[in-house]
Length: 329
Image (cartoon, rainbow, N blue to C red; front, side, top):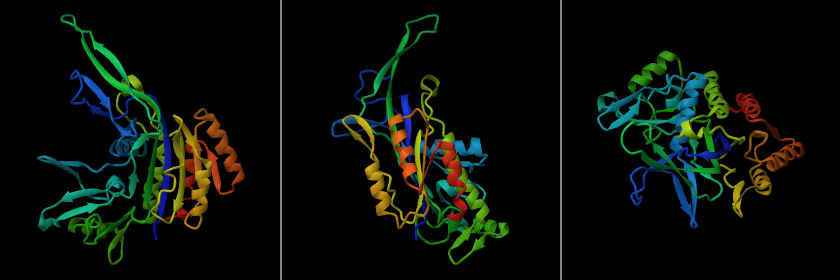
């Protein structure tokens, strides 16, 4: 049976260029920096790549929760981590791939228990061109440059596989062969539990790792152009629950309608009803006051009408949710 935490987030990006794509081959000059965007039905939707979000998350875990990150090893044109999920929690949570020599165990890979989508603009939005100039030099002409930025709200989903976090497999299958001889020796010396195919960290360590991942959400930081745009990338709205299926049921609760963001409570009610036999915890909703005040009032009232819905600030909700994790692992 699947055992997942699923989440949804909205990030307010009021004057932002969080993830850039460099210049475009068709640009009239070489010094224009474009933001990453996709096109749908003739409209432009800025986005932050899933990889960028994962970088912010990993960086926050290191700086705010003292995670010792797996060292990066460079070999000519490739790079990889230590591939040691016992010692380094990011190798556990974010996965890895490493091609060892045959005598050392061969190639090992690990599917990331933490999965996330890109953050994509809810509403179609054409980025604005901002013109700047480098003119501090004492001689010569000023050097003009351009970059794009946008004002929008980004949405994304994520999931944490509790059945795989802190469990390391020896199955001969891509993504599941996590272990190699030296790692097995370490697991034995550390006293990890072992069954026919898995080595398992202690419940306390698994609980700490997943709690840190959730508790990092209010502190997420990062993004390009911080010196001139300074966007707070921590979510302004999150939903969290535990579910015994691989589906992320929150995908379509926020949508675009007439160039406006719509939070569809009917859609939320429908998926909660459809998956009530699979949902294993309360629904936890965290939201910042001042962000989309009409939706704030709707969700606050929604929580009062439903005993299985918790509502509060972002940090209050992550704290409440992690306080219940011991029952889920």
